[in-house]
Length: 225
Image (cartoon, rainbow, N blue to C red; front, top):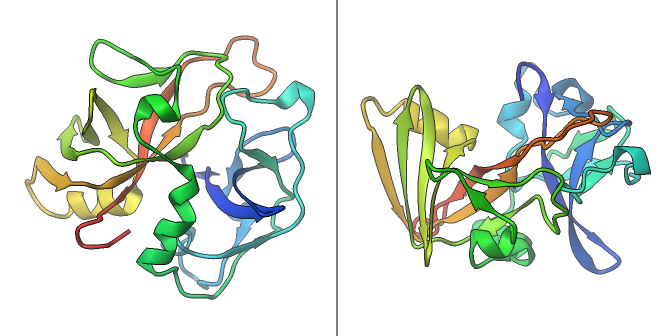
């Protein structure tokens, strides 16, 4: 997020139930990359904060009444610098799929029931929509990734749904961009992580619509995530 912002969800188990938490700072503001301790001395957070890694964090609280984002029910307030990436290996492909299974839906409409579409096919959730999730996974029939105006997008086909969303999977974007002049990349039966962009900052009088982003693409054919 910009030059130093940091937005992420983690999966954890609370009282026997799988939950996703979106780490935020007091006041329900965005975290900074410097708020996370990591084991890669001299390396970047991007290189170690990847899907399937294990993290340790202190107790958390929910946002106060004046700071609640109804579009983002996973918001959890944590104390900066008390989040640590553990020096363990990433989960195996199978264990990772089992971990995210509780957050999987059949379609974007199941994940975001109030989803609407712009004329260009870009999906969004209207401002101030009370959502049950701000992030989750779907399994479309196929996708096409293409580049436009220097950015990568994903054209998704899933049952009766078809939409285009910006690709924010940083490792995949880097791989696509280094492949030369490839303009379209096809993938069958992937699993997509969809997330809502932030609707508003606390204390703003007017919120905005939340656009849907593709933040992780899982290759089920090659079992790579």
